Image (cartoon, rainbow, N blue to C red):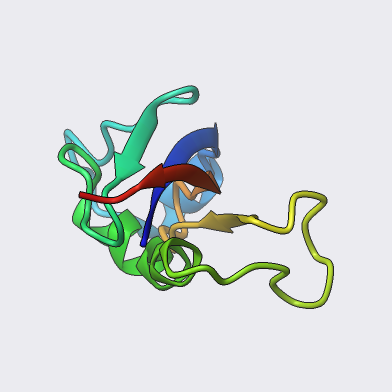
Length: 104
């Protein structure tokens, strides 16, 4: 089993949808573009939010166990995936990359 690097690539914010549909909240997401987490196998890295993890964990698990070439050539790097969390107001896109380093 391998470690998987998780990089926050983009964080969108749909203020029009938030104003129309979301109840005001003070704090929603701590993730910022450029943040990097390392999953030890498919164990959730500390600091990564639960909702994001629930959306990306199946890809992390697959990559950590040697899966590659998702969807027949979707990614240029066959040992990677670009996935997003499912927050409809502020979705975050993550680049997942299998590392050569074995998980603990």
